[in-house]
Image (cartoon, rainbow, N blue to C red; front, side):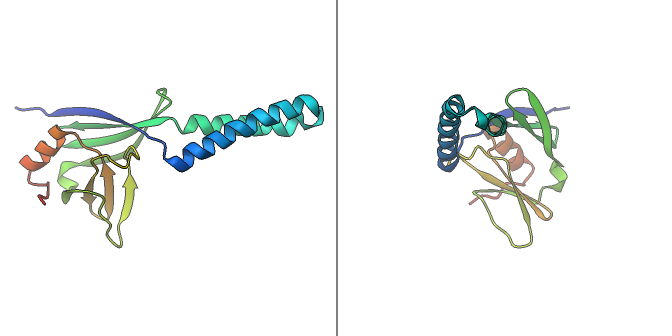
Length: 153
């Protein structure tokens, strides 16, 4: 019996808009800390803003882990390299096709589990009424070719 076990991680790349928001958030946190020293009455609102800002910044540090074992595919989100959350699960038998690029179909829900990097090699997996976007490795694509799920362009 031939067991197939594939596992790979895709780190999230923050887009330009979020990087700008992060810079503005960090700058405003620094300015408000200095203002609190000058105006102690602002302590509680600034403390609340700092806590929310820190929690928001920490939630933007994550990566996706793909695990494929004998036709069973599981996608997990790893937040800050500490907390793992299973976000999507499917079986090879449920796959209608795997196609290169981000496909859009009306009436289908899309789930994006990619890095966000614009030059990444993204594939679309069609599962019933769901479209799953991911960045597969070559071994996974070869496995899909073997089971006639990969659409050749």
